Image 1 (cartoon, rainbow, N blue to C red):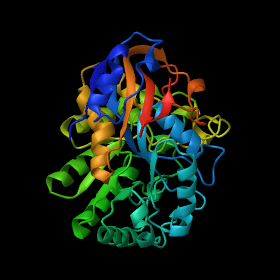
Image 2 (spheres, helix red, strand yellow):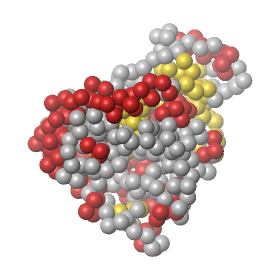
Image 3 (tube, rainbow, N blue to C red):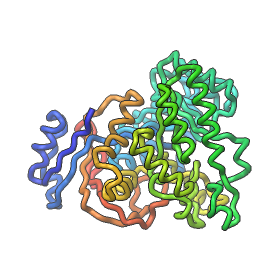
Image 4 (cartoon, rainbow, N blue to C red):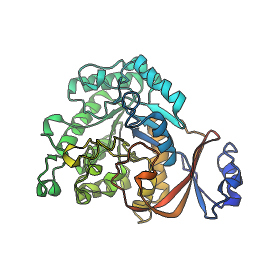
Length: 404
C-alpha cells in the first residue's frame, strides 16, 4: 500500500482531492480562499498509542479534546491506552468507554483492552469478551512483571488473533528513577532510570514470543539495546514490531532542562540511543512512530523533573517535528514518514483505511506555542521550537474534523 499525496493549489483543491480519494472527499475550494500557498494532501494519519484519559481522568483530557487535538495534528484514527477508571478489563467497562467515544469523538478511536485485571499484573482480564471491540491488548503505563502471566496472555491473545502491545519496564531495576541514568542525571543530582529496565523486559518477552508464536508489539522503544533485540527477533522470523515516538528520535538527555515538560516514561536517553533509533527507522526495524500522547494538568506538570507526572503531549506536534527534523534534513523521505505515521500502523494493527485526509502547508514555519493546542495538556518538549508544516484541515467521512 502506498500513501497518496498530491500538491494542490487553492483553485485546484476540489478536483484533485476528489480524484485522489475516489470522489468521496470533495470540498469547496473557497475553503482555502484566504490563502494562496500550495497545499499537500495526505491520507489521515494513524497513532496506535495515545492516552485520552476518559473515563476516569477527564481533568487531564477527554475523548472530545483528545480527538480534536488529533484532528489538529492530521490524525483520523488513534488507539487509546487502557490506563483509565474503570480499566477496560471486561466488556462492561469497555462499553462505558465506547459509549463516550460514539458520542464525543470527531475521529475514529480504537481502544485497547487491558491485559490484566485493573492493569495490576496479577490475573488476566476478560480478553475474550473484549476481543471483537479492541485494537489489541496492553497494560501500557505498567510492565507486566510476571513472565507466567505474560506467557498466559500471549497464548490467549494468539487464540483470539490479537496483538499484545507491551510497555516494557522491569520494576526491580527502577530504584526510584525518573530521568535517564546518564550524564545529565549524574551532574544534576537526579535519580536515574537505566536502559536495562526497558531492554531486559523486551528480551524476556521476545523469548516468550518465540515459545508462544504470539503477535507482539513493543511500545515506545527508547534505547539502542531494545532496537537491536527487535532487529534480531525479526531476522529470526518472529511476529514482532515496535514503535518509537518523535521526542526519542529528535531529542536526547542533552536537551533536558529542570522542567516537567521533559519528564516522560521511558525517558529521553543518550545521543547514542537516539542515533540507534534513527538507524532502526531507516532500516525498517522500527516501522511505526506513535506519539504516546499523555496529557496531565498544569499542576501535575509544574513540579520539576523529580515530582511532575510522567508524560508529554504529542499529537499536535508529531508531523511537523518529524517533517522538520527528519525529512527536511534528508534523514528520511516524506514517503517514508507517511509510511511510519499512516500506512504501517494501520497495516500492523489491522485497521481499515478511512475515507479521510489532511491538508498541510509544508512551507509554513511557526514557533510551537502550547497555548494554541486543542488538547487539555500543554507539556511538550517542543515548546518554543521552530517547525515547518501547518495543518489547515482534517476531514473524515466528508465531515470537517479540524479547520485551521
